[in-house]
Structure formats: C-alpha cells, structure tokens
Image 1 (cartoon, helix red, strand yellow):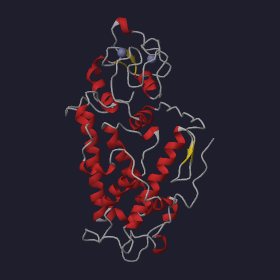
Image 2 (cartoon, protein in one colour; image 1 turned 180 degrees about the vertical axis):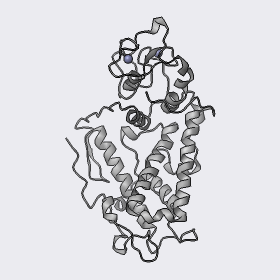
Image 3 (spheres, protein in one colour; image 1 turned 45 degrees about the vertical axis):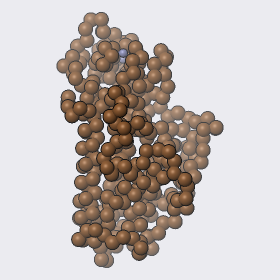
Length: 326
Ligand SMILES: [Zn+2]
Ligand SMILES: [Zn+2]
C-alpha cells in the first residue's frame, strides 16, 4: 500500500515557499509566506527522546567513536577492503568459487569485483553488498554485520550506510512491509507508515518541513539580527536548528536512515543528508541566496562535514584509495 500524500496542514509543501522578492534583500521570502502553520510547531512540547543529540554535530565529534574496535561499514568498504586490491580478481585456486553465491569467481551473472574479506573468505563484491542490505540473517544464520560465509563479525551495520552503498552499487534495498502492529500514522507528517520505504519518506518529509520552517523563522519580526554585514540569514544556525528539532522529534525513525548509537560515520552521513536537502531547497526556491555571506558560511559547514566523513572512513588517518564501487 502506498502512503497517502501528506496533507497540506501537516507538512508544508516545499513548492509553497515560493520565489524571492526583489525588494530589499533578494533572498527574502514574500511577507505572506513567512508563517507556515505546520503541525511541527504544535508538537513542540513533546518530550525529548533518548537518542544522541543531533546538534552535537556542531562540535564535529561523534559520541564514543573511539570505544569500538569494529570499523563502520563505510570504513570497512572504502578502506579496509581496499588494502588487498592488487589481489582483486586473482583468487588462489582454493577460492575460485564465491563463498556467498557458490558461482565461479568470473561466472557471476552481473560482473562484479571478486575480492577477499578481512576474514579470508573470497566473494563477489555484489554478493557481499547483497548480504549486507538484508535486515536479517542469511540461510546460514549469519547476520548482516558478519561475513555471509563464515559468520565473523566484520563491521558496525548502519541503515544509513547501507542506503548509501545500495545506491552506489545499484543493489536494490529490500523494502520490508510492516505488520499491522508495527504500522503507524506519523503524527508529524500525516504519512501512513507501513514499510521501510514509507518510514524513510516520512522522515524525509519532516526534514524538508523543518528546513522550510527554520529558514522562514529567520525572517520573523522577533528573529535575532543577522550576524553578517550583508544582513543575510544565518543558514548555519538554521541547519543546526533543524538537527536540534529532529533530535527533539526522535528522528530518524526509519531503518534506512538509522545510525549507530555508539557513534560512527552514520552520524555524520545523516548530517550530510540534511545539509544536502537544505542546500537543494535553497537553490531551488531562493536562488539569490548563493550570493550572500550566510551561504558562504553554510558551504563551509558542508565542506567541514565532508571532511569529518572522510576522516571517519580513513580510520587511523590512512586511506588506501578512492571509493570502490564495482
Ligand atoms: Zn558471488
Ligand atoms: Zn568469512
């Protein structure tokens, strides 16, 4: 069942924000658009939930990241697996057959790099990713954070990293349907959440609504004065405000956006998703803002976040190569 479209009173459509007015500052929204009556504001009093405080992204330090000996899945794929890349596609005779699918190393239906995992098992890269994107043990009973063949735990599994990898390798992410017990109506977006995909779409809709609301709030009469010489909106403060709101509402709720509670690269990836959504919204609906000081600062924040993700992926500061996607 497809989730119904969100009703207008619950999630303000991004398209309603409109274009800019050419009056004083070209990035300012029209006066009549300065107050979306979103359900978001009605739920302000909801008690905070027990999740990491997303606004701590501002300090660019993931919680407890040094306490885990296992790498993040992204670090595992983009760093650990690349150490033996010179051996790729040249398995020893005893590893000619894929430990995951059983087919010959060069006999996969879709061409894929054949490589050794750190546990020593050889398999097609797509077979490895195919196992990782599932949300339950495989036929051998090995979980998704383990080698599909021998069951050694290899990395920290995070939904948001899996989403990233599945998009990158074009491996379909299974869309699990919820039982009626697990299904719910999202009180903040109006979406009927009945599957992983609808949970993801509902979280995305809330992110978009909060971005719009926080941005328009900077034009409210009681908003703090701009800290920039050109009086442009403080987009960076806006961004951290959105993260703070998301933490307040207990998001992300979707499995596809989940990240490790013990801290890992997924924490930063989520921040990056929000940055990119905000960036897309501003470019599409408030294009003139790219000429402002506030925008320049916002772009610096995005670059810093990108640097943090790279640092996490590199682990001890060493990177073996660029992203491997075959
Ligand atoms: Zn295989
Ligand atoms: Zn193994």
